[in-house]
Image (cartoon, rainbow, N blue to C red; front, side, top):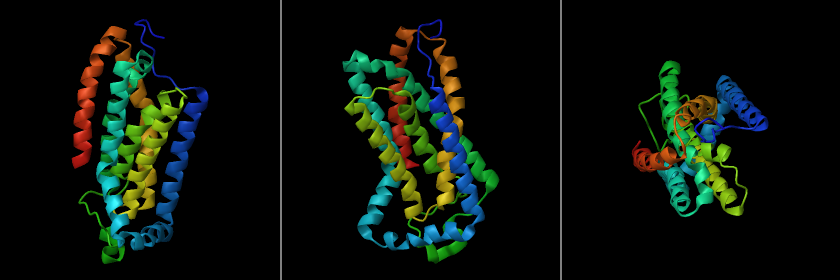
Length: 246
């Protein structure tokens, strides 16, 4: 615990090694898939049948567009109950980390996109992909994957309560983040390698965002955190709107 009395965000050694291993695995598989162009293409083209199914395609488009907003909504609902229950307020610093990790991982992924400059699937394969989502930005890594995992990760890593409600919230966040990631392949917007690299990007940026969050928290006491959480909540509302329109 720091001098201010605010408990810093910290992972166990096991969890920290798990994050590092997951990031390494995701990036290794992403690069391998990109090198094995035929396999990356096979996964993409293999979803063409789903894109022609109106119901499945509609669900995919909803997940792609609103999945991130739903992740933020989970945080806001949790924050509402935290205002009613003192035992939930220990998670207040997590809201700061959500904003910081999104703010670090999102731009980092977007910058890497421009550097790598991989063409989108519809550019390389045209009508063969039957893509339901097209974009003028490069393809690698997937911005939606990066941002959705960055949003879900703080709660998964730093909210440690194990009662059924917390477990249910974590399962819901995983489903929403995976839904966004999968929708990008299903809609033909990205290769699988793009999505895996995006998830890996969020994991890579997590330690830096956590360090920044702890630097800021070290300057606060519990009363300041309680006041700042209102500002963070307003920022989360703005983030929910922003992620619905990007």
